[in-house]
Image 1 (tube, one colour):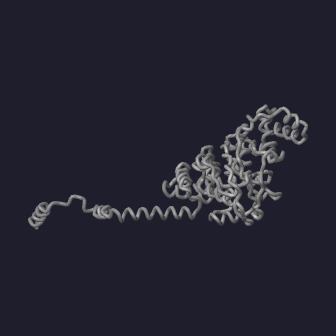
Image 2 (tube, helix red, strand yellow):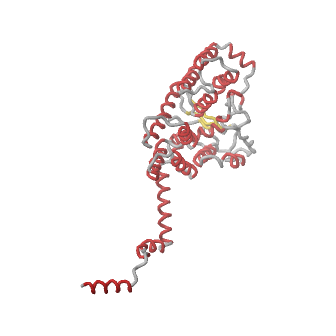
Image 3 (cartoon, helix red, strand yellow):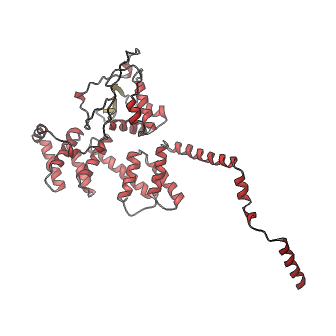
Amino acid sequence: MNNLNLSSETASGYTAVSDLFIDEYVPSANGDFVKVYLYLLRLLSRKNSDLSISSLADTFNQTENDVMRALRYWDKLGLLTLSYDSNKELSGITFRQPDNKPSAPDPDDTNIIHTTFNEASDSIPDAKPAKEPEKIPLKESVEPSRVTVSPDKLSELSSNDDFSMLVFVVQTYLGKTLSEGEINAIVYFYDTLHFPADLIEYLIEYCVSKGKTSLRYIEKVALAWADEGISTVEAAKEEVSNHNEVAYRIMRAFGITGREPGQAEKQLISKWTDVFCFDSDMIIEACNRTLKATHQPSFEYADSILTKWNSSNIRNSEDVKKSDAQYEASKAAKVIKNPASLKQNANRFNNYQQRPKKSDDFYNSLLSNNN
C-alpha cells in the first residue's frame, strides 16, 4: 500500500475545525467517518511520512475498507479530493473548500498547496481565519440530464470521433435517438465524471441487460460508480459481481431460493451497503438474528437491527460482541436491583388458590364412611 500525500487548499499550522463542519456535517455523519476526517486534519500540522490506508486502519482499529469508505464519504461531500496513481491506488488526499458547483472540481481552477508530511515544517505560521466551506449536495442529488451543456462544449464534442461513436452506440443499445436530456447525461459522464467511452458503453449495456432503460436509473448507477472511484470496465464488472454476490448471500441466509430480490428488498440491500456501508458479514449477522427472533425471513426486521447498529456506531463483529455484553450486563443489573421479581416468579405456582382445610376433612370423612 502506497504512502499518501496529504494536502490542503490553505496553509495552516494549527488544527482548526469550522463551525459549519460541526453544525452541518457532523450530525449526519458516521462517527468513525468524523474521526478519520479530524485525524487527517490534525496530521496536516505535523511531520508524518508514513501515512497510509494501513496506518490509518491501525490507528482506529478498523479495516482498510472502513477507512476507504470514510474517505469516499468526505470526497462525495466535497470536503476531500482523492487522487490516484497510474495503478489506480490512492496516492493523495486534498482538503477542499467546497463551492456551490455540484460537478467535480477542476484541478486547474484550484489553488492547492501540496504538502507531503516529510516536507512539513515544524514552525507554526500566523493563524489566519479559514474560509468556512459551503455545503454542497451529494452526487446522488445531481441529475446529469439537467446539467446545462454549453454550445461550445457540444461543438467541441461533436468533432470528437470517440464521443460521436459513443453516442451512436448508446442510441443503438437504447433503440432510439437520444433526447437533449440524454445527451446532457452522456456529456456529464464523459466530461465531468471522466468516464472513458468503453465504461459508458458498459454502463448502458449493464442497465439494458437488467431491463432498466430509464435515464434516471442509468444516472444513479453512473453516480454510484463514480462515488466508488470506478474508472474502468474491469472495475465496473467487479463492482457488479460483488453487489450481486452480497444480494445472493443475503437471500441464501434467509433461505430464499429460486428468485432474485424484489424491488423493495433491493432498496433495503442498497441502503445497508451504500448508505450504512456495512460489509456483508454484518448484514448476514443481522439476517441470522432476524431468523432467530421471528423464525421467518424479514427484510424489515433485519433493517431495524442494522438501523439500530448504524445509529449506535456498531460497525464490526467486535462492536456487536461488546453491545451484546453490555445488554446482558444491563439485564443482570436489573435482576440484582429488583430481586423481588425473581421471588415472585419462583413462587408463581403457589399463587393458585389452595383447597381449604375444611374441604380436606369432608373428603376424608367420605372415604372413611365408604370403608
